[in-house]
Image (cartoon, rainbow over all chains, first blue to last red; front, side, top):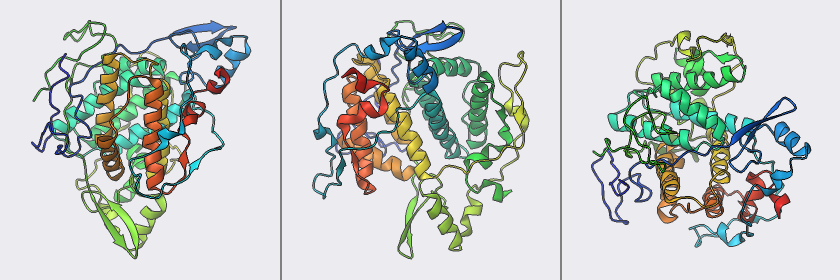
Amino acid sequence: MTTTDIPETDNNNNNNNNIKKPQGVAFQMPTSITLATPRKGKIVYIEGKKYILDENGNPCQMCNTLDDFQSFTSLGNTSTTTTTTTTSKPTTTTTTTTTSISKPSTPVNINPVLEPAPDVEQLGRSSWTFLHSLAASYPEHATTIEQSQMKSFLLLFGNLYPCWYCAEDLREWMKENQPKVKGRDEFGEWMCDAHNAVNEKLGKSKFDCALWKQRWIRGWSKKQ
Amino acid sequence: MTTTDIPETDNNNNNNNNIKKPQGVAFQMPTSITLATPRKGKIVYIEGKKYILDENGNPCQMCNTLDDFQSFTSLGNTSTTTTTTTTSKPTTTTTTTTTSISKPSTPVNINPVLEPAPDVEQLGRSSWTFLHSLAASYPEHATTIEQSQMKSFLLLFGNLYPCWYCAEDLREWMKENQPKVKGRDEFGEWMCDAHNAVNEKLGKSKFDCALWKQRWIRGWSKKQ
């Protein structure tokens, strides 16, 4: 294990003391990258339809569309009611307390109208918005440390993405298409390629990557 | 620099060879966490209104609402037209090629109707969808390695979030509220607390964290 290494920063201001932390280091550990075995479930076909299950044989919320998730349940597959193997104890409202206890607290909405939990499509749209924005805000010319930082992030993202099935595809794609993170232009194009690989897999039309900045950087086209 | 450390996995299957990679390792490097100095711009007040600028003094797309971004520009602040300091060369459509070149390629949509680039609110909504899903799909009881992996991810996320202003807040919050990642319950509640800290800052009502599973895990309430 190498988890006791000190995080690197490019301002040479490392410090193990909890009070004086280097700028940007929110907490001390970890440290070095620790990769767990990615989650993996299985794929089943019922009446010609494909369903993605989690490691317990239950439909994976983050891996199926809402329609498919509901269709699996309506087929008599009641295992959705046993997704969790331990009894979930009710959480308490005390967890809503923030560190700003000295300020007047904003009210807790105790009877919110809950939106439905995201399915694979909503999660995908949201995550691509985040990822393309990551590229849009990336430095024009990244330092070696910025490049290494982004590679670390992508490595972990590919291991942790909530849809295990999609994450597996992403990791496979990244094996053949190493992240290009020297600067914003090539990183944005690489991200667009990654998104197009998914579009192709889903039979969607591909995005013209020449337009990625117009899509993700506001006002970019005005600069041409 | 500790960037040559070998990633840890919990299947004891590390390998430096590019062909036989441990499951889930999409590419070889990096390796250990390398933290860059987070981006930072400045805040200006014009006619009593707050605008968040990037390091070049231009309005930060990911840090302002669309309204504020446009309002800043309409005030005669034309620096939005010089956000990039180097001339952006047009990219070519060849970047849309994926690794699946042997399959019939899906068409490229060459004249897409482009949605507007995301502002701070759309980025925020999308990112919270991703983050809460991360908690919803987290193991009930995480191994030490899974916990370390998630901490690494959160550390990098706080350094890289595209809105530098929001990222700074998140890092500050995480200094006082170390990630709780022993299992899904405490991680989901911690994430809900993080979201509520932002809600409070924005004057929005807080979410009742006792309901986080009902909001983010489909069918969870049926299991009670």
